[in-house]
Image (cartoon, rainbow, N blue to C red):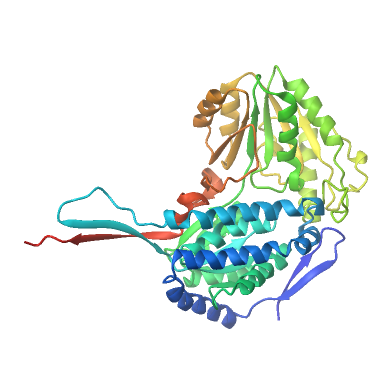
Length: 463
């Protein structure tokens, strides 16, 4: 009997342990999902929306329990627990609200003697493979719109957030979701690969590493299933000379250090115009000194541990390598007593004197580190922002909206922000370029990824 354990970064204890589903159980689950989808797709969008809304309400009612669970499972401070559920609600309610219009028939211009339209039909069974870092937000991006589009869903959550999948299942059951329309399975990596190679799902929605995405593609080879892959990021910020420095400092810090930097769209590299470089660095260092690194179950903590010691040590290695190569580290880890080294508790860091020969500016860090480079203007900033294998989001900090739009047109990225960062607007497409992946979630465009077009060409005049 194989088990999956959630090892808490708080104290290294086993917080949760679950038995991995047997192969026969997995096969039956996907067969049941396929069978249940036949009836589910016949339900009206309004009926699906009512059930999804009830599930959403049931999940929100668990909020007091979810915040400490998240702290124990992946280390986010309890003071921020409500924020994830707030974003979860915003995305779910928006996707429910726009479903009817997004799934409506596409009708071209009239043509005498013919009725013509395109229907959006559900794909079938959607297999969501969700990550631990924002376990509710990332999962809801595909689960709710998939259900609204008439698909059934099987969820496999990360081992670090085992209880999140169970919370989804509990909410669906409380809403009265029909049997097998939504299922949560505990699977090993090997079983996940077997599911893909079997062709049981009709679509896979995966959020994770670039290596994980390649494994998804390899496992699904020859099955012709749809793959939605949200993979790595190394998101840049560009601080222009005309910026409100204080506003940029406050928000870039939040974008770099929230969730201990464990965000696919968090800011990992910052390019600052030479005219405001020194003021920006001074402000960012001063603000970062005020973070409280510690036990995420304590209200005063603003920076929790990384998800595991090996992740923190990877980030420590990037910092040390950059310093050896000439970078300046502006914060002393000793100022954050919880950082004892070789533990998940990692002090935040601001680096200057960095360049693109350093891993900290080119490889995904996924930790509380901001590397800052001085630039002479827009052209240099754009060239550096595009010098990356990734392209999820990019933020521009300026008072000039026209300049932000023009610069945004030149950046290879999925989303362009001005004067904000690290946020998913559910009315806009969430997508990426290059090794960040492929596919799209959220917005009306996201519904296109969860359906297939079916054209109707009906000749009415046969005289």
